[in-house]
Image 1 (cartoon, one colour):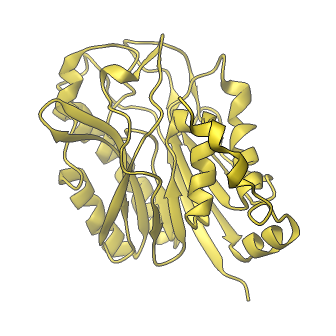
Image 2 (cartoon, helix red, strand yellow; image 1 turned 180 degrees about the vertical axis):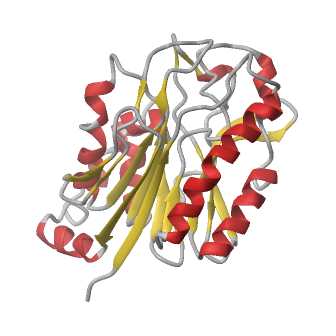
Length: 288
């Protein structure tokens, strides 16, 4: 029996950036720009919707300016609570990537997961934090400390991996072992060095672990940092590693796709990667 899921990904350019207003004004503009896309998703019957990394702000990590700490909020907090209302309205699971403030001076790159009845299910905190030119993330975020949770939503078992995490197969495997049927990777990545990996790594994770993935990237060039073009190309990939729906490179877009979770059983019964694992031989992988 088929188990069809309809999912959506929103890729978005910023309407306001640094110098265009206060941080609260920038955040309000970004959230307001998303609302018509959220409503369109709900009206189309999307069951699971995911936004891009730190979706309420520009990607501010090319700089190291402490004023952006003011954009962090608790999770759950005001933005998550707002999205809980939309989740309830449309019976839609939502993955909401937020700059999280845990306590004074303690911040994480986080994604909240909300069930279709509006219940806050929990959060994932990004584990792998880059610190290279253009991506000074260790200035803003502590490494995640909540493991690799999988959330049993009304429509599917959902995991989250965030942006730079995608370069590390270990967490992708952990999400599969924890039961994920769909893994979402909200990202902020620009044209250049790593672009060739965008359509390589995540299909490889999907094929190696036998699950679907929804991969989101923002669009546009963000002043004043101007580190390059965020090239969109958000996509869905199936458990065989085939990209079956992809967004444009330069347009704000709600990408919607339907897929059958029964493919997971079909693929895993053909490729017995979980049966044939050898964790007894992997101890060196966790050595310092």
